[in-house]
Amino acid sequence: MAQSRRGSLIEAVTNTAVGYALAVATQFAVFPTFGLRVGVVENLGLGLIFTAVSLIRGYALRRLFERWRL
Image (cartoon, rainbow, N blue to C red; front, side, top):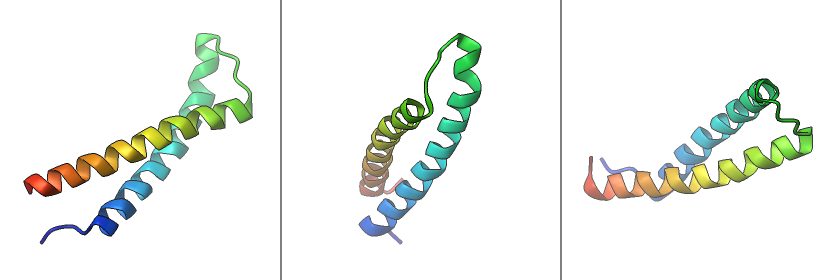
């Protein structure tokens, strides 16, 4: 059975939200190791930008694979 567009969006949003939380936690842990000094607001903003890109990518790929029925 094919996944609906709404189902694809819900899956992509959930996946991306979890990814955002992990990315921000990773940034807080890793940035100092490389000497990067980023404030909390900037760190959250960077995470948000990458999350938006990830959400769009995840949704587009899901729809493409659904079209191909892989």
